[in-house]
Image (cartoon, rainbow, N blue to C red; front, side, top):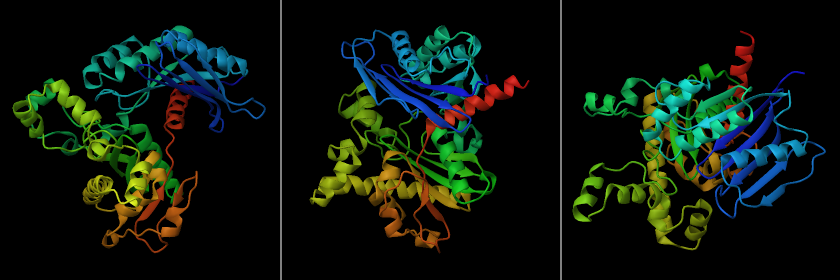
Length: 406
């Protein structure tokens, strides 16, 4: 029996998101989420997607740790005939947030790899430890199965040094691993490739600006399938205005707040990461609510939206200059895929750059990838739903298949 299934795990500090896919066609067999791990109100939501499977199942009961969470996931999958002991399961693919400079592609996990991911914890203290926990838990469950790490940062490791390095003392930067790493890499890789497909071209022949706009937001400049610049940096704080993150800010703001407000570094960390961005500007980080408030005449919401769009336009212009030639701009993630006013405002006034939206196409709702630019626009504007789980599964399966062939 040919092993064609991949289980994708995204382990957070108190959650596990998962999908089981069959790579013969990329079909999803089951999806689910375990949340509030370690609490009395732990919750597992499991949805089988086979043709004759039942509907969504939910259980609420204490789940002590990630080991118990994955055991519960395995039980749910087994109830649908998709048990993790199946010979059809080829590998488990893990999302790992930070791979530093060493991990530039998907990697089969061993103790040496885990030690390096552990060494990178200071660069991703909220994410890498949870990723490691998920990996070790899955290894204990299926020690015989290939476990593959797919890194958020990997796609951005093709950036030239001129884009990746900050203009600070190089010895200090190298000693403390300070540089632009970028994040959302699996999304940017997937969307750049799907945009090329939408245009009927090979990725190697397409230059695209990818705008991943969710609660976290990032932009990338992709030349011929390779990232040459991205907006997030050492951490996911840099770049675009986000739901709760400030994005680009004068570094001296930190020193100023320490001196005049007596704030600690932890206080400022919380301010810039959790109390800034849209929520800091107007009290809401949901673009739907912000648009509702704008329609009701709310000036704070309007200003927040204007600042968000201003920053977005600056990055479009900057990455146009970096690429020299742009074939398409692709909007993706929750806001990018669903907020037509954001797309319209971001492109408005950029006609001299070859950008023009078809207002009717832009207003339409669709689950598929589509063009929303006018037929005569020199630069295509695309809406491409991202699929990070499918991208992780593809990379995982390609690696284990290649290894199996020797």
